[in-house]
Image 1 (cartoon, rainbow, N blue to C red):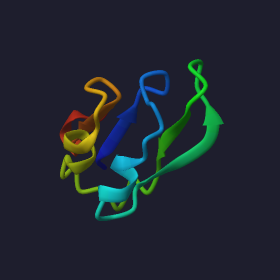
Image 2 (cartoon, helix red, strand yellow):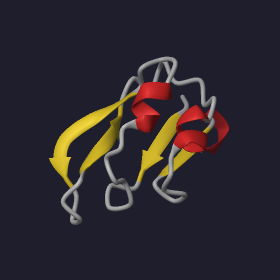
Image 3 (cartoon, rainbow, N blue to C red):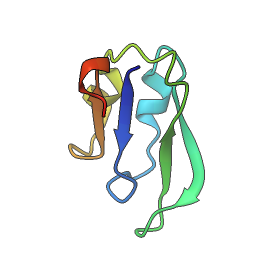
Length: 73
């Protein structure tokens, strides 16, 4: 299955990735990171197509990593 790795402490909680995900695999977590921002949570692993739209839309270059099925471990 594909996976989006979220680095909680890099996420600023803008939710742009949440709004662009065509499969609805990202949501706000309801938890705060060490910077005081609510960060994004990845779920619906079975629906993720690893399209990369979340990564491309994120203004924080190291907050998200998209892993296609063969890269997930």
